[in-house]
Length: 463
Image 1 (cartoon, rainbow, N blue to C red):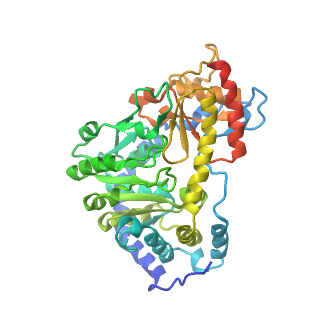
Image 2: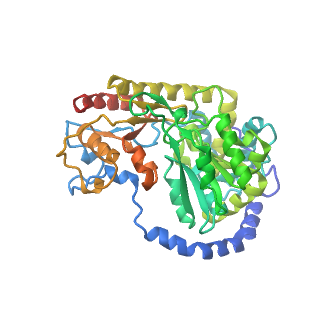
Image 3: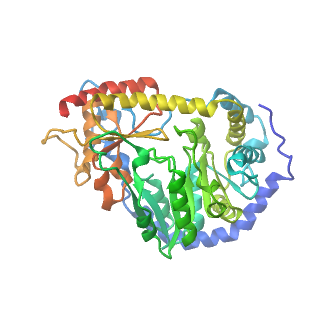
């Protein structure tokens, strides 16, 4: 890797210090105004969805220890988004080399290292049809999650509303509650035959009249997630235009979570910010080096948007994280440039699609309907036909929860297969919509996928 000249622009470290001073006073006011809602959130009993997998027995207090039946010796972990492969070797080498750069090991500029923001501009400018300004239209963050939190922190005050499309990534709600906001939901509706036939993720539809009816004078943000977690839906150009027009009409900011942008299984991936300049002025797009390069532990994310929006995200970033690791930014910059020059994105998509197809083979064998994804690495299975014994000893923690929580426990105990209850991605009022669905992931080794398939074949006796 060619080590960049850190001083190709005047005094980046001084710029970081100046930025911190500029936002220090506003940061103090922000902390004071949000202290009350912080206390409320952290004193509430927030139930994490993975709690369904943790056995209550004193003798089995770990996930692996819970696998006590069926001769299971190790877990088939097809539940979480923990990738089982490394980033490309040239990025690992670049990260190691960056550790020898003195400046990279110190505070990076709060708005990101120039080498990284220039690489982002180089990649995204052709997609947006204009030059992305590295100073005013890019915000660098410590992971996509922190970027989302910064957006919600920047634009949502206590009592303001955030609209999400459910099922959805659970952190949208936690981030909204963190700043004292109110979450409102609008459903993605499954097709009528979803319980009996294999359907496409793109067939889960949004009712635009329902969406518009949720908007009030307090609505500040609409969260758009494409490719979608957990469905794998990629929103079409027509859908994005309808969403954009509604948000422009009501002055709502579009927070477009596109961290799985490179995992789409069609010829093109539509981006709402590129469809209409009016949409672009109201859109913040979130990207993730972790999701793009199987490097989630590096914690490097970014946001792209109009400078009038990005400046507030940069201010929130200073309060919440201040800066992002320099060596990881340099390695990410190198990886982005290399990916543009070779077939990395295409190869990655083909490999993930192959793993998804492999995982779905067992569902086809069992004649269980599932949702065929158009993007991301998730598969949602409809397990409504699975029947467990009426007297099965479920733990008290699953009592009162939708059926999919008990399905998860049953698969874990009987087959050693860990999965996620999809109802946890719905609001409580609509959790029954997901009560028969389980989420699986394919970002694992082929051996782990094969192990899960072998174990799941045992479901035949419960159908």
